[in-house]
Image (cartoon, rainbow, N blue to C red; front, side, top):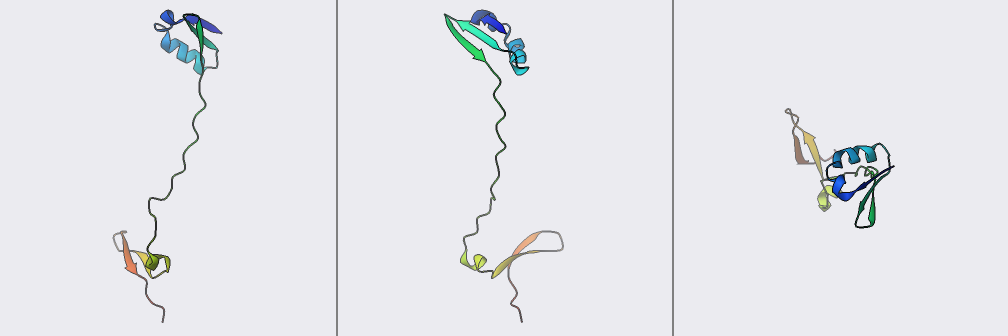
Length: 83
């Protein structure tokens, strides 16, 4: 465990961060108050939602579709009617 006064911690800040990252307990004391320096666990990855929200009733009914052209670009077109 590392215990250090705040005035000295300023000069040793990066060493203290390294120690905390390795799991060592780091205590900084200032005017009688003690602070513990700890490594927080990584935040879980956020899931991405689709940037496209379909609300058009014609699209939802299946009357429209995406079709790829010769260049690989998507085109929004009416769906062909089945014969």
